[in-house]
Amino acid sequence: MPENELIERAQKGDKQAYAELIRIHHRTVEKFAYQCGVHINDIPDVAQEVFVKLYRFLHQFKRERFTTWLYKITLNATRDYYRKESRELAKEEKLMRNTAITYAAKSTEDKVLVFEEDRELHNAIQLLDEKYRLPIILFYFHELSYEQIAEVLNVPLSTIKIRLLRAKGHLKTALEANGGAEHGQ
Image (cartoon, rainbow, N blue to C red; front, side, top):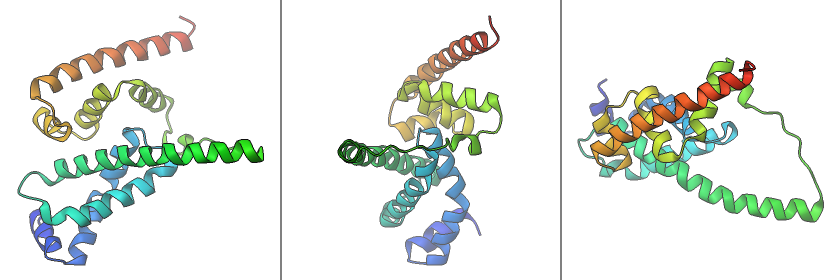
């Protein structure tokens, strides 16, 4: 069934159509959230928040590109999640200080990033300022056009072009520096 038909049916309350939209876009939402800096353990929570918001606001969706709209929702949910999380972290830190409990946790990043090159690239991307990181992720990993990225991020097209150019330069420098440091250069 075509996506626009699924959307129309879901807007009319068809829960199976909505479930199919989730099935189709779940991986994209998780991948984008991770690339935006969501910790691997938090991805299910953020994805759930995205699809709850999607359900609540699906009636407002017009004839724009659905995935562009979904990226906007994911980006906003990611930002909201970490605002909430920072408040929760402050509470946890206070509790830990008061109870003197320490936690040891194995990095789950190893489960997601199998190859060292992937890890290096991901880390370099995460170190970029958000204004550079998001266009890189949307362009290279989600294959959005410059125009779509401008729409998702709500900035002018010319700004996206400049940010992508600068982001590539920053990444190249970071990866060369990291490669040189690891290989004794």
